[in-house]
Length: 444
Image (cartoon, rainbow, N blue to C red; front, side, top):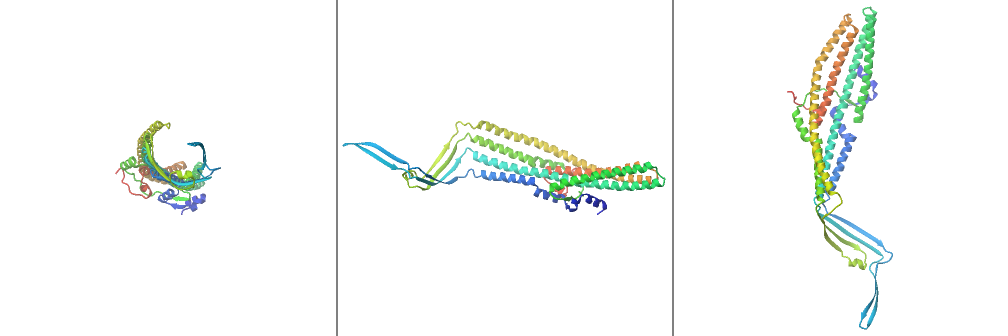
């Protein structure tokens, strides 16, 4: 471990306890532990429970019911009439208790829907479509989290590379300042050359301090996402451009945003069927069986059991069924049109990000020669300055050009990785970025 790394760790003590984690390991942890993804999965489980509940709508129901009533006095039948007979009218005065003061009954009641105008089946299809939509929403959130992880993970790598380059620049300019001071003392250069070296060193220190803050912010962002201190691993594999055609096919057929709108279309079609069912009759069976009751006359007069069939046909309703039917049809068309537009947007995004991958990979390769040239130019400027053939500003410019070229190459790699994350997440296969599955280059 070199002294520059020790200096970085000294600036950020929490990094001493950071756990080295590959991108694959970081993604597995985020996928398993993310509170957002956990919430989305619970929403999907809730939709699954609603789907299972809807599956029971067509089953018969059976209830056990009971009642107990305490009356002020029994229900009484009183007859006070005159009865005509051959010998004259006879008075009749009868008082009969029909119930007792305590009335109780326990019975089983059941119902079974035979036909409901297709509304039961429609409700079941709606809940199934809602479950499928919820599952696709989980997948959408997973891909968003993956992209965010890649940005923050390799964002830390980039800021650390920047800090390392800035520290190297400080070292180089410190050496240059020491040489300039020595040459000034020997009378080989003017004081202004030493002052230029001093300013360049101070500027390098300022940039290194700013780079430290960038590392700190990037590290905090990554640690917050993963809920632990993490030390990311730099990307070491070749920058390969994936072929576009297979990705376009997968995005156009399998992207969860499109499958989400497919599910919403099925929801709307189920709503259409349910609203049409409001115009249709309903038919069902019902019945009851008395298990226990009081011993009154009225109880003996009532049947112990009964069964029947219930039929209803809506003639005129004030529930706005015609308007609800139009709304359901509009919802189905809305989902269809939104799917079409989303597909166009996704394919355009894929093409844009694929071009960004190509451009970043090209820049990364191109900057290799720029770094090589800048390295050689700085070496020559250093020799020339020591021999009095170059000024301090020329050496500083050469040093600055080298740092800029190295940083530009690191930034090109970061842009490649961020764009590649977008591409693989659109296609739904994270493996090429996570574990380095080989891809055929799209440019042969």
